[in-house]
Image 1 (tube, rainbow, N blue to C red):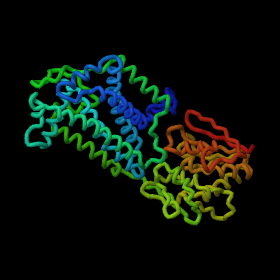
Image 2 (image 1 turned 90 degrees about the vertical axis):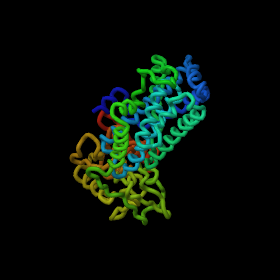
Image 3 (image 1 turned 60 degrees about the vertical axis):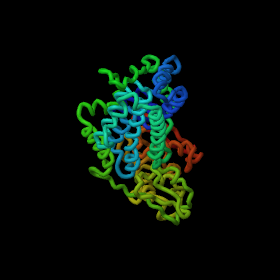
Image 4 (image 1 turned 90 degrees about the horizontal axis):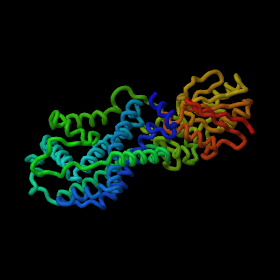
Amino acid sequence: MIDRLFDRAFGAGASPLRHLGTLGFLLFWVLAASGIYLYIRFEPSVAGAYDSIGGLERWFGGALRSVHRYAADAFVVVTLLHLVREAAAGRFRGFRAFSWISGVPLLWLLYASGIVGYWLVWDARAQFSALATAEWFHGAGIGAEPMARNFLGAESVSDRLFSLFVFLHIGLPLALLGAMWIHVQRLGRPATVAPRALALGTIGMLLALALARPALSEPRWDPLGAPDSIAIDWLVQFAHPLMYATSPSALWSFALGTTLLLAVLPWLGGRRHAQPARVDPENCNACARCVADCPYEAVRLSGGKAEVLAGRCAGCGICAGACPSSTPFRSVRDLVSGIDLPDLTVHALRDRLQDALAGHPDSVTFRCQSSEGVPGAGEIGLRCLGMLPPSFIEFALRNGARRVRAIGCREGECPWRLGLELSQERFARRREPQLRASVHATVHATGNEHEYAFALR
């Protein structure tokens, strides 16, 4: 329901809720670009850190610093929304488990990067955060004496401490980027670039917020004591007041318990065991179309033939729709494809098509199971529209059907990520296997589904 409200406001192609992952990548690069400029102007020393940051609070530098601050907050928001949305949709089990588990360390790296960034400012907020972090680590028994003592006196703080801060604030984001790269490794054609309209709108909002409400430093760090009232960033630094409201051990329990729960979530509750696709070596010519189209990197070439990695397979059938041997025009009694689903074979699909042509010769409809409607008379249900080879459409038209329709899901709602997108490319003759030029296709996208109508030219 919320998704569709955003679709109406922004359009499915530019809805923020449907592009939370790409927004995360966009915000990371905004942080990196603005951070490079800020680092050039920053003086990493006890005497110069606070003043160098203050010197940025002119029009350009101040705006860029504010963009950096608000992009960090936005990064936290879109990451948490992405986590909640994927969890609510149940996208963490089976073939999705790797992507889910690899995302858990991102939370630690994200918060650590943000917290260390505040320390560089060397103001009262940095003092509060550094002391709270030191007390938290001491609460876990790290260090023989309270680490906070290293921050209490001016004589114990040296420029080398800022070298450590700078190292952490560069190293942690680099580790975060590496973890983000790992996070999308088992996704075919991963979406890491936000749509142009959404990207420009996001950057524009950050700039507008930076100009309307500039991010300013708190008073200078006081080695004799922190002020009574500090304006903290609740999105990045919420753990500090939570620790003081409870205890360091309670915060450790919360952090580690939440991490453990997220890590084991793929194995909790029921699991759907999809039958993985299978390869028939005699009909596989190693064209690699199934490798290129698999949404979850579950197919690879090995020994000159396709090979299915069963643990990654979603059982969507998109690979069968990509196989050049999945054509009903083959004059064989048993239609065996180079790669196929054992529980919904291309041969069974041809049998159902021939039955539909016999019962309703004028019209045939292929319907994705994720579309709004329910397959009716003369309609052939598909697990995914992407499992439909375009040759089936021409076969139906040349065997008596005057009209053929293919109905898919709403844009952005394919359970297998790429089914609708790949079908659109095949029908538009931009991807193999292509719809032949002798077939004319028209598309009609309603609020609930995509519908294609086909006829011979």
